[in-house]
Amino acid sequence: MNNTINEIPENSYFYGPYNCTMNAVGLYLLKHNISIDAIYSHNFNFSCSFDNKTISGSMSNQSLFDFVKEYYNIELKENGVDGIPTNEYFMVTVDVFYVPGNSYYNKHHSGHSMLAYLSEDGIVNINDPYLKIHEHMPLESFLNTLVAGRPIYTFVSLPVSDRVASDKGPYILNKDYKVLYKHAEQELYRILEGICSNLDDEFNVEAFFGGLRTLEIARENYFRAVEAPEEYVKKIKIGWKKTLMNYIRMKKNAKYLDDIKATIQDVLEDEIKYLDSLHDRSH
Image (cartoon, rainbow, N blue to C red; front, top):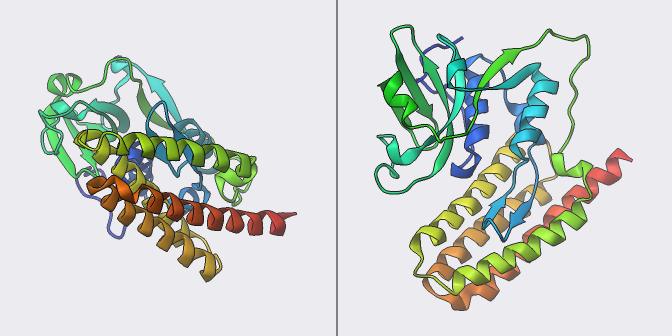
C-alpha cells in the first residue's frame, strides 16, 4: 500500500470536478493497488435536474458505495469527527473556500469530497487528483474546512466471500433507460434555456460547463475500460466533444442554443442505440 497520499499513482485517470466522490474512492483503491476498471465499466448513466441545475453521466454516490461493497468487499461507513482514524485513509467533504491550493480558495463556497490521511503527529494530508490539492495541515485547522453535517467515511474491508464478482455491465442498463433518457433530455433543454436567458451569470454558466465536461470524462473512462464497437465509441465520444464546443459558443451568443440541442439529441440517440445493442445481446 502506498501511504504517501500526495503521490498519485502513475497512469491513473480520474473523473471531473463533479465526480469528486468517485475520484476519492478511486484514489483509495489505487493506493491499495486495486484496479478500478470495474467502476469505469459499470459507471454509465445519464441524469439531469432542472431544480439543481446539474447534469451527470455517473451513478449516484450511494450506488457507487453499494457497488464497491459488492464488487470489492469494501464498505464505506459513516462516522462523525470523533471517528477519524489515525494512519488510515478516510473520505471527507470540505468547503474548498477554506482549502489553500485551489482556484476556489477564498472565492467561492463549494462542498467537495476528497481523500484524507491523519498521521500520528496530528497532521492531516488531503489530496484531490482533479483540483490538484496537496495540503498538509494540523487536525484543528483541517476540521475547520469540513462542511457541517456531512459524514466522514472510513473504508472497512469485509471478509472475502466465495462469490466471484462479475461484470455487471453499464449501471443504467438495468433501469428503464429510455424513459430516464427522455426525462433527462427535457430537463437538460430547460437548463440550457435558463442559462441562455442569463449568460452574465458567469459562475453558474461555468459550473454547468464543468458538469458537461465531467460527463464527457465519464464516457472517455467507460470506453477505456470496455470493448465496444468502434462505430458507437467514435460517435458518442465525438458527440460529447461537439456538445462542449457548442456550449462554448452558446456562452458567447445565445443564438447557438438550437445547435447544442441538435448535437445533444444526436449523441443521446447514439447512446440509446448502444445500450439497445447491449440489452439485445444480454437477452
